[in-house]
Length: 183
Image (tube, rainbow, N blue to C red):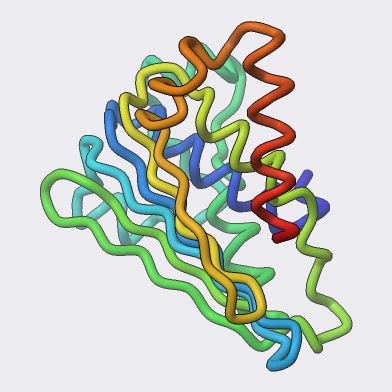
């Protein structure tokens, strides 16, 4: 279940990571003054066919790939995109999905002043999760919050910390991402 907007972003990031992508770009924009929140996740994975794009919002369609069946062997539905679409539309926002050949871009925006918009959630935690997905050689993060922006690159973090998965690196990574969010 998606309790926060970051849960939805994580789901889209996971879709990108599982698409065979080795590059993922995440843009998260938040403006408390204008009460707007938006995100874009772009990958260079296998992309979607015209039929897959047309059916992306149907909760009773799952891509049926080996990866999907391994992750959820009995599942015949895919709820991530339908939940995202429903939440965006019901809260005064919108969404777009683009894919042509290779790669897919998913964007959504929300009116944070709408009472039904979920809370944003743990932004640094979502970034950490995205940076740790297996197979992604590069993750580019662009974050804008109340007019202040920063960027994070997975390859730069790996150069500074070594492997990201050991406990000391995870502690430093967590501190760094939380600090970037506050400064």
